[in-house]
Amino acid sequence: MASETNPEVLYWDSCTYLDYLKGDEHPLHAQMQMVIEGWREGKVTLVTSALTITEVLWVKCSEDQARSMIDRSWEPKIVALFDPPHTQPLKIVELNRVVARAARELVWDHGIKPKDAVHVASALAGHCHMLHTNDTKLHKFSGKLGGTPKLRIEPPSWIRQMTLENGQQPS
Image (cartoon, rainbow, N blue to C red; front, side, top):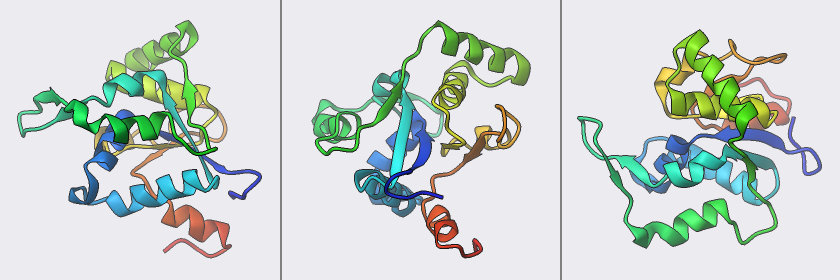
């Protein structure tokens, strides 16, 4: 349960940030916007890997999964997400040897792609119980990785957390 003194801790991977930046064209934009608003209000602590700061600059732009760099005109929006002007900081998990080794184990043990494994290992190192991603390939690992409790891997949602916070059953 999140509160002003004990906010919900959520990990966002690179694709979640990219999809958020797409705006209304993404079907989950409203849910992602609610998370960002919760973060800005101090109700959510957002965590991500240092890798995300650079990885967010490459976006899939075609059905063949080709990527291209985001134009520098997007810089103010990107900087606002990673170096916010408000008092709620973004928690960055450094990609160090310990995180890299944990990611390597995830690649070998579970067949997770290396960059995705860095995000999962970073979420675990950042003591997150929830990893928000729009990468549906990672959703199958929800509840199977990490200690106790296991890491949940789901699309971004703040509505459900707000419902649970109010003591009501999720719909």
